[in-house]
Image 1 (cartoon, chains in turn brown, blue):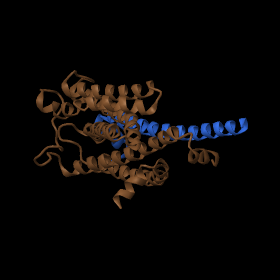
Image 2 (spheres, chains in turn green, blue):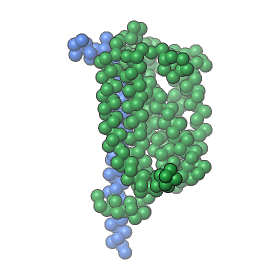
Image 3 (tube, helix red, strand yellow):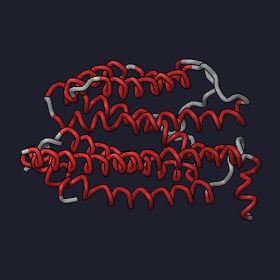
Image 4 (cartoon, chains in turn green, purple):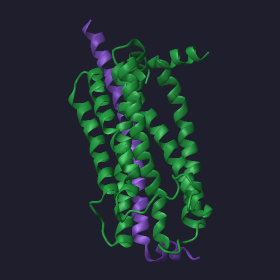
Amino acid sequence: MFNNFFHKMASPKYFYDISGRMIPWLGAAFIVVTLAGLYYGLVKAPPDYQQGDSYRIMFVHVPAAWMSMFVYMVMAIAGAIGLVWHIKLAEVISISSATVGAAFTFLALVTGSIWGKPMWGTWWVWDARLTSELVLLFLYLGVIALYNAIDDKRTAARAVAILALVGVVNIPIIHYSVEWWNTLHQGPTVTKLDKPSIHLSMLIPLLLMAVSFKLYYAMVVLMRARCEVLERERHTNWVKELAGSQ
Amino acid sequence: MSFSEFLDMGGYGIYVWSSYGLALIVLAINVIGPLQLHRKLLTDIARAARRARKKT
């Protein structure tokens, strides 16, 4: 049964059809979870005793930062799978993650900057956390530029996978930077081994927004992957028939 | 809590709302982009197929 599933998923047409049916459900789930997250985050959660209401930026900043790393790992792992086993769908998922990953990274950097101004008194410091996150943005942009610079999509996917894999070294640096170096950036309050040092009323909206961003990513990566499949398969009969029937 | 107090966010309104506004814009762009690309690809492929048929 599993073999059959993977065999089917490897067929571009099957992937195109089934992802097309999943996208509306992911979109609906995204909207519901986001509205709940916004309600708990902006209305129900009390102001922070140190940071007042400014800490509410956290509910977009932290999920965006988590996603910037998560999407990078998906991109690198899918790229590696494409590289080793020549699975086209893995290549497609890998490259389709780059744009949305870059968007999450940009969002994490800018919302962090907007939060930094009232709390630290500065928009930016060249410390390890901020610098390594900026490097992550450049890695994403490098991946996108490299992919577009090579005409043959399969060669491009292979080159991109290698670049993405080399860049993986940056991910633990981002994660541990606040522990390894002295910085203005606060330490982790959720992703650590002992109990999270964050009150439940703030943890609930944070986790809801994290789920919301995951759903959003799943939706957008499938939308992009479908475009990529159409482009790669444009000379096949099923794509021509599909385009002709529109 | 009144609505204007809610908008004020204890004096941090400009920071909080600009963050959420930016997030909304960035997320919207990343949905609109693939939607437009999808439509464009289907039109392009259909046009190319029609042209190829005319030639033969």
